[in-house]
Amino acid sequence: MKVLVCGAKGFIGENISRALKQAGHEVIAGISARHAGALPNSVVVDYAKDTTPQAWLPRLDNVDAVINAVGVLRTSRNRPIDAVHQHAPIALWDACALANIKKVIQISALGSETSETQYARTKRAADHYLMGLADSGKINHTILRPSIVFGKGGASSGLFMNLARLPLLLLPKPVLHARVQPVSVLNLAEAVVALLGPALVQQGIISCTGAEPVLMSDFIASLRQQCGKNPARVLPLPDSLSILSARLGDLAPGIPWCTETMTMLATNNEDSCADFEALIGHTPVHYGELVSKAWNI
Image (tube, rainbow, N blue to C red; front, side, top):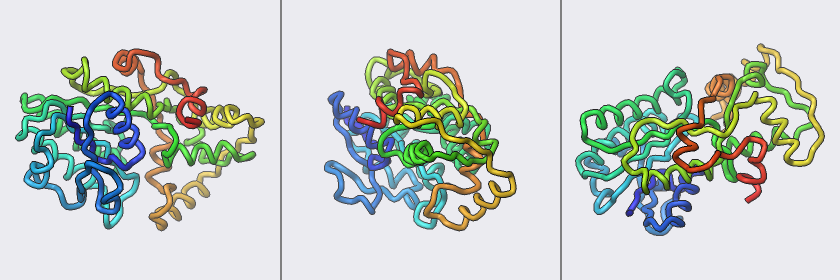
């Protein structure tokens, strides 16, 4: 197939693009202006401005499938989260319906259905609009909702690996006690490839998770153990300092830590991996093997 991958220069998009090419598909890389010329066979997209179907239709000529792997953790002037997560994707869905695209795959997020963070609300709005088009028979879709996506090159993965190297782990208590189910980015890419193969007709929402849930504190401890280090000392950060650190992060757009990040990390992020396992055809990578199977590659 000829596949447009939006966010092809991002962590998830790069891995999906690589897997699609290895499977024999032709990838059209949807990239932002700052990456113009960085990838062959690419189209430049302005997710802050391309919020009408007419802006997307020229990019869909002879395209068979569309994958949206665009995401921002925090809003900014150049990449407002409402436009990037909601308005631009909704315009893209409408254009896909008009262009009779065979398959649309949305990379969303586990927990977006119930969370009230701006990240989740905007992802959820795009998901629901896509589902509405599918319910009316206008589009063939699958929404993949991964837990924490882990792999080489991921910003959050790098953060977790850096935390795992510290002899003292100091995090807000709700974050330490949150249950997560990290998924290998390579398994997520496998799922996309499968959806453009025999599972092409499969529609709906699929939770993409690792083989087993784990407490955040135990996940970081496992990463440390996988790196061959002795156990670290773990201390909960007092609530007042947690709130203060997050608010300070709100004032520094260039760093990942902020109130929204703390809220998301403090929320349980787990689900059954049964549908995901059936889609990729094998058990997803266990969190205890992520360093060897998703980081050291």
